[in-house]
Image 1 (cartoon, helix red, strand yellow):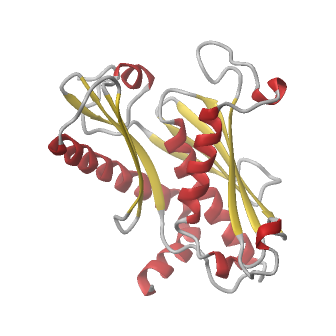
Image 2 (cartoon, rainbow, N blue to C red):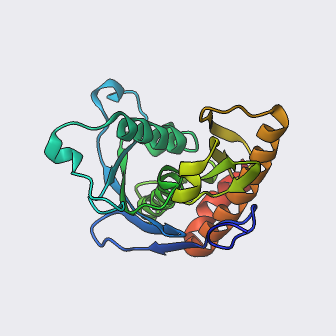
Length: 250
């Protein structure tokens, strides 16, 4: 058994709370175990300069951790005046992942900003940010449709992300912080609801892994993605209909 008494192939408890920010066009608080990330979506009726006149939209993300999201206080990057390489990497990952399931032409000349703020970190913050960010995006698009600014959803299908790792000889799904710190191999998987891989980050921490272990980790990750998307469907209710319709008739 693991530190929190889960089996190797078990996810932590997944919970989504929607509508937690009254100002944002879409907002979701995602909890995966003790990891909690607030994701908000903001719609701007403009695009970056490099897209002006090209009749397409854009999705961009920002990621940050509150000072006491971790056991020891970490100073705000905004105060230091410089983002870490880790933060910039995660922001690019979230942005790429969400753009992969959006038809940017159908979005029109507007930008949707996804802000992901880690309230409490216990492993898997980047994967939780992608999953929660997608739900916030769905809610923002739902608002655009309800207001008549869009006639059809630009979202092609669902997306979620999860971590898998090798700790000793064990392959574990959805690592908490202690497991992640002890892992010989870290793998982050981003996958769509149709089972297509968007991004796969696998790294041996002073260790190697076999092709079979890689495939086994992918299988574990796919199981976790399915559970996350099922929980998302339950949380979104009617809003999920727009995404489901696009997949069904696409």
